[in-house]
Image (cartoon, rainbow, N blue to C red; front, side, top):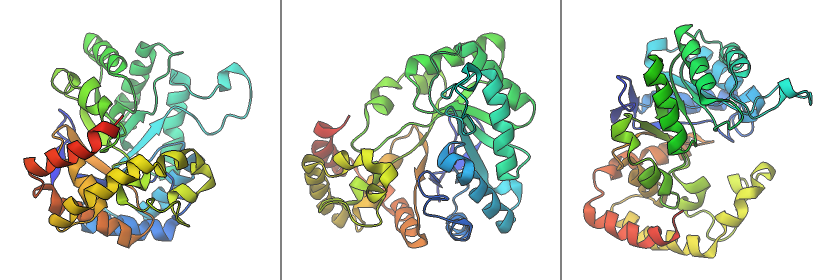
Length: 327
């Protein structure tokens, strides 16, 4: 396993990490989570990603119980959560409005996560989406307070615009508060503009690190959707119906077919090639993998072997195939 600094912080994260979106509670129970996390740790993974909204809190509960059973020393692993949508808001009263980053919500949300995880602190916490209805100053102060109280160690953002990240960073700089250290954007061969263009100035100016998600574009880049939606796949889940049009795109699947000879030349799979490509970006601190089976996870971890084999010639061929279709 390779390890990278998380942005400009001193924290070392594994180049590949394991996420829980879609899988934990829905496809992965505690027993399966223990097996997956143990296999990941055996391969050198030290970062396990989660979010309050995943399975409406049940994903954190599953991961927390798995951590209890695994009994790892707390220093040996990194856990994250993300906040924005909330999970306990049935009332229509304004104070219970979902989609917020106000201080009241954030200060209560962190306590809920700690209880579900069974942890004293969470290593990384994210503002899961931007909130145009709450002043950025209020959100930055709340995240600073959470860290000062010892409930989290670092904070960052997920799918924020470059302008909002810079605004948050400048508020923290001006008031000597804990700054946002990392951003968690979608990044893969077919989704590139934000990471490669919009955030370009932030890496040097703010020391931003990336913990990227969806390296396989929800499985499209593994090649599994070239003949439609296979049973048991992410695209077959009722909750993922919004992905189906993109997963079955003839143009995108034709591009995936063109990538296969490159993967074969390097002795890897399509999935490994796509993940290795993301790892080549020097601004990516860690690539979050999703898996519902140990075999699937182990195959994806094989991307490590391809990373150093990817040369400029391969990258140019990949760009020629994928850049015209990338968002």
